[in-house]
Image (cartoon, rainbow, N blue to C red; front, side, top):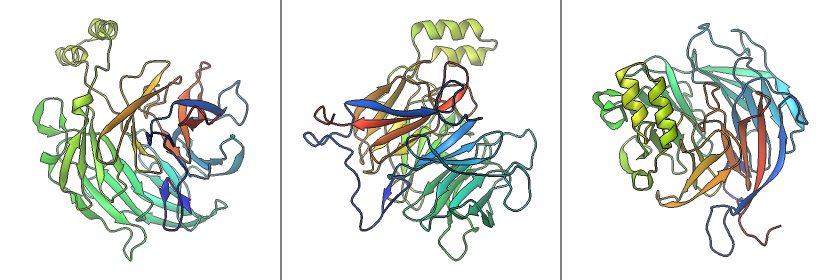
Length: 369
């Protein structure tokens, strides 16, 4: 059985490499479906933020401002919808009105139930496969505000980044263990975290983050193209990406940013073409453990993915004609996407101004038509 892009014992993952070359970079994409915008087929979406996709082609989507879980197949046909805004048992929503939150997420557990994470306060709510409320897990998150998260389906563990600029921490919650709400500290030393700009005394308040197939995690420095690797105990084991860094801004974009800069710090940032390569949800692994990175080199009409192997080796890049939606709703290339079962799904911006979901089939060989 495949779940959340992970091949559990006893299953064979779908082919996501070229059968002739073994290369996991698709040669082309075929659009399967799109829905959500005003003039698209299928149900209209409000503010889709986070999506996950199983290898069987089931998509889980959770809206940003109106917490509501929707489940679709790859064609966009609705299979399930549930959610009620509020602070009571089984209800979804922040208890701090207007506060910054890193978003919500929904994904299936191995028993078929659906887990929903909401960050303020840090709570995981479990619903049945039919959307009925089952239980609520109040996570004992250290150091305050949740900043990012990841789910390791193989180990049924939830990773949470908490804190602020000066002292972020990373913890693991073993959802399948005897104490699922108890935090296991993985990383508390800010020296191992990306810096905020060029200030060696300040850790970055936010960074790209994902659980790795071997039980560890990776962090993406949003100020420069670098991906840092940590083992399951939170110890740093290496880094990659800097050797293939390319400018994310054109000369015209730099000139425009300089013209709009109102402070000296913004002028310095505008002139650095390598800053802000990653958003918080720029990393996804496919079924075979290849890392897909939505990069800051994308434009208003094209999104560029870099694809890396299990050891951090750069394998190639892929462009899609779509603009990914970012966590703040500005339509940058840092948005929610998923890669599983030989398909890519993404929350994109439509010409009408509405968000939509697109699904492509990944074609690894020109013979596969």
